[in-house]
Image 1: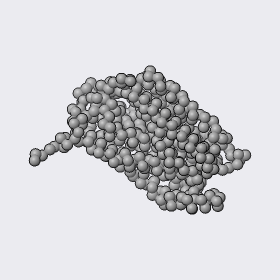
Image 2 (image 1 turned 180 degrees about the vertical axis):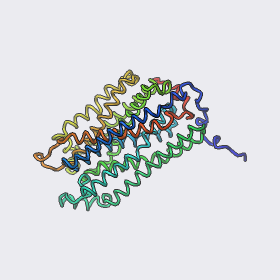
Image 3 (image 1 turned 90 degrees about the vertical axis):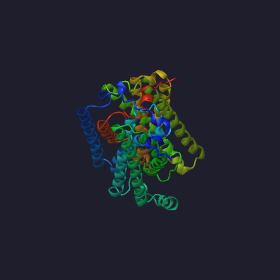
Image 4 (image 1 turned 90 degrees about the horizontal axis):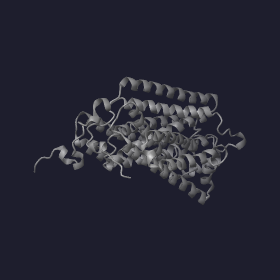
Length: 434
């Protein structure tokens, strides 16, 4: 039996010679000036630190529970974007997508921040338990009614207990760190020299990683958002969380690519054909989000079980009623009617406007899910609703700016594309026929 080299063990499509000689892959086109990247990092991290600091100060001035909720809104908006980037990276590897090679490095950059914002979520939960005594995650505390305590002990205490909660959280963060770092290092290792086996290893990692990643993201959404109200439960919630993050995550990728193109980079690597397909993904995920959100609401409305409908009643009345209708229009109707046009998806300026709106409405979605829990159950006369709105703005803007700063640092740390990606030729020649 003859000995076979590593390259002979990989799939034929992984043995395509890289497109390193292509003019679009010249060093000046696929790298960015480190000094300008550092200035963007400092600015964004500074804004983020101020925003987070103002939100924390709001906890002392107004309400600590409100401050933590504001930080959690921004944090979960960012975490969902990063987690979806991680899952999409593995999905693209598994289906052997060729068109994504031009922006593969940027989606990997976003994905690598998943464990970072997973860790900040754990920090927020720890502050709630150790500083506020279990205020936002009410089941951690002792301030709820005896009937609620009895329900918790009878139905959910095996899952909702503090040691198991933080133990699960540690597992999530570790798993995300392993998955994202393995895939990112394989990608960066190929920058040094072409090696088809690295692509095969990335696909193998994705084969088991996408299952583990999806399960950990699903349970994290249970624990960190749905778990704020331990009476409510929904098996559709993780899918809704994924759909929302996917819509905003593709939008963030579009914004990154547009900004890089405006800086004179990725010329000939990213063009109208790639924007067109990313626009298609945004269109698909806004429809998917609407499908899941509507049927989740419909099933609970139809069942009409008090402990379940209370969750939606809280969000469809009072100060949150405008948010309910804003999501119906802003998260589905408007993006659907705009992105359905081919010309919008192929126009970077128009697609940028839609992408900015997608990130904004995603934050509103997280506000809708998280913020009502601050004053849940408080009589209407004593419920300030959207009072002290500056805390919410500071928390959301602060976390988004921190995300932007960390992402800018990632982008400036290496090549903007994987120049030795064996699928780069296909990506450079990518065309749409629909």
